[in-house]
Length: 255
Ligand SMILES: NC(=O)c1ccc[n+]([C@@H]2O[C@H](COP(=O)([O-])OP(=O)(O)OC[C@H]3O[C@@H](n4cnc5c(N)ncnc54)[C@H](OP(=O)(O)O)[C@@H]3O)[C@@H](O)[C@H]2O)c1
Image 1 (cartoon, rainbow, N blue to C red):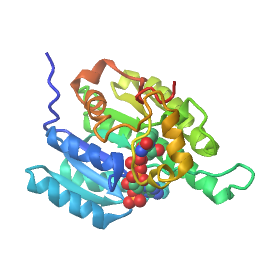
Image 2: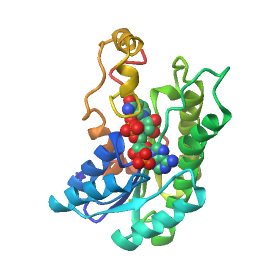
Image 3: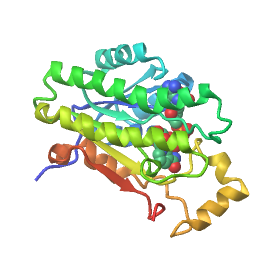
């Protein structure tokens, strides 16, 4: 019988300054993992690190713009120096990239793909290299969890760039899982439906946003805790036989 304890694991979470990533950091810390919180807004990270430490956890804040590809490996080295060998990567940082294809500025398109796709690929391989070098992978403890979206499998109006970026995350998850299967690195994704965070709060405050919610089968957004148990499943020992899976948690929103 395996337990979900993450004692002696070090997790690196991108986009940990708000929303889902922040919640994931607290969840993993509560389960005993040492957590590295990475994002650009470091003042927020410092406050959350202080809260995790006050609750008895181990945490560190890492300044990181994931669009700066060269910075990702160095940020992981910084995390490992503070907290020990990396065993869990949560590839969560994301931007929404909304706008009509007829007028979307190309730099917005580039930003969406730099953050949502390129950085996910680079962070995954930087993490995998370290997991292999440290022996964590050979022990069967290596977990890479990509945060995709239902947007990876359904088209959302006005979000073509975002949907395409999340479809790429789904594809990469399966491809990297296949590449690293024999290394015992588990690579999986969560495809969430909508939870209100900074990425979408403005939209859901509008009349069309509320109309979108009314169109969902259950006419609601998901609660903040909707992904907790899925994250714990994929981060913990039970995931040693789960790799290349995309777990949709969407309250039926994509039906
Ligand atoms: N909320 C939903 O309904 C939902 C549904 C499906 C999928 N998702 C996905 O979940 C992930 C988290 O989104 P969220 O809802 O939690 O939104 P959020 O509250 O806006 O959080 C986004 C996070 O990404 C970080 N980020 C953005 N650009 C970055 C960059 N260049 N470098 C480093 N960090 C960056 C932000 O940190 P800084 O600004 O401090 O850098 C922030 O911590 C995203 O990948 C999103 O696509 C969300």
